[in-house]
Structures are given as structure tokens and as C-alpha cells.
Image 1 (cartoon, rainbow, N blue to C red):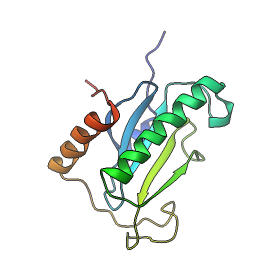
Image 2: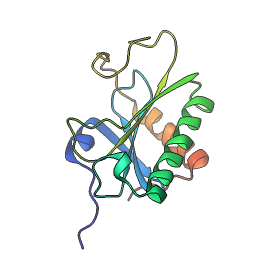
Image 3: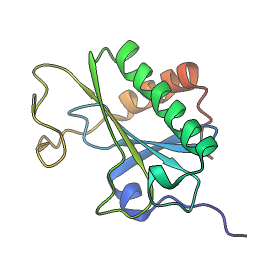
Length: 140
């Protein structure tokens, strides 16, 4: 059996930060907004095609990440989507939003042009906070 792999486009666009029980957790490289992507270990392409147990687990993990974004990163709003028109692999977006962010109040999809990057120190800090808050397992 082959080991599960996250799609190469997601690897190019994101930092791999760790693994939850079901999903690999990524952080989009554009630091303009906290944009997390969860990739469930499944062959299904659409969230609604998952068996109820897996769909519930994926949604629960997305809710934990959304709580992290709100409580720890202090974003009053999260956007959630399971879109995947470019990357066929099932992945879930959890995006922290606040008034005044670079594309407020429009969606980030297609509007986020600020190319700011995370510093190594900030990436390490967020990862450490995720380990504490989300029971994230670091990838080797």
C-alpha cells in the first residue's frame, strides 16, 4: 500500500505544519490572513462523498482549527470552504478574517494579492500554538 501524499500544488502553496487524527494541516504561505488547509487522508474528492463518520471527523477537525483561529489568532470571523476546482484532492479551507484585512470584506479566493510571507520565527510560533491547542502531531 502506498503512503498517503498531499497534492503537490498544496505543498507548493503551503507550509506543512502537522497531522491531526484524520487530516494533514497546512498553512498557506501568504501571511496576509491566517489560511489553514486540512487534507483528510481519503481517496474521496468531495466532502459530501465521505462516509458519515469520516465527514464528521473532518468537520470536527476543521472546527478545532476554526476555534484556534478565533481564540488564539484573534480573528472574529472564519470562512470555511471545501472547494477544489484546481486541486482535485479533497481539502478544506479555514480562513481567519478581520475587518481591515487585505481584502475585507470580499472573499480571499481570487482577491488576496498581498504576498507577505511568514517569518521562520512566526511559523514556529504558530506551529507550537497548534500543538498545544489542537493536539497537532508534528510531521517528521
